[in-house]
Length: 306
Image 1: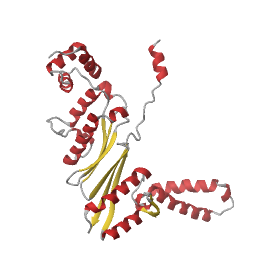
Image 2: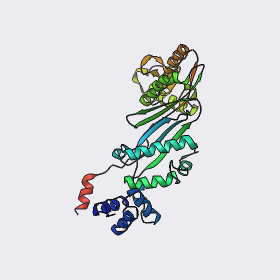
Image 3: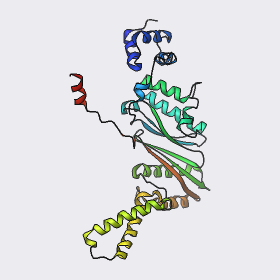
Image 4: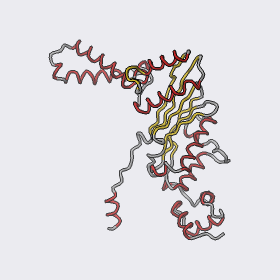
């Protein structure tokens, strides 16, 4: 088949490979870009290094529960939000989540060594192909898999936040607690608790919080004449506020702020005639903690015209 100059140019932009090699690859692949990229990689011509060196801080956080009840929440990063909305990229994320559910890899490196669905190639190999075909760096950043209990997923703003809530129920059909699980997941997305329960707060964190609160109390002019034991009691009261802000079960339920999450769960469990317990949760916010590159467009243009 005839290979157009436009197609050759497009493949060159995607791979950084010379025009003649791109034309040959497209000819060998009968015009199929994915196969052409694979051919170039097999020949050692296409390198993903240039794309892979760029910061991937966008992407999606995705959560899914399989028919067997396994829950997976995963974050896969791209360089731009535009690519994150691309159907090919989103399909890739769903496929990788399915691999996590089916294979239970120990970590991201183990996941990369798993076989990609519908192929005889590894997840790492297919990821490399996507980097070239989509034209951006793609990184599988992290995932959590829940094999037991009742799992309820929630995806906020098309993948800006992904949440999985893991529940244990007794005397209640799993389907009956999905609405509760979704409410809890939305709470987690909105309020971003650090801990599940106040009993999970480690001593070092508590000691640091007390230290900060005591320093604030001493700096407050209104407390100038108050003795140390009174200040300590004030700090203990504020520790209770810390629990309410940072521990999921002690947080005020966003749909009914007169009750806490644990009180709301107790009410629902009583209505359904059984027991419900939150075993755990995971909240991924896409790109959190990744240092994003700030591009200076004016400086870039100036450097080009020197």
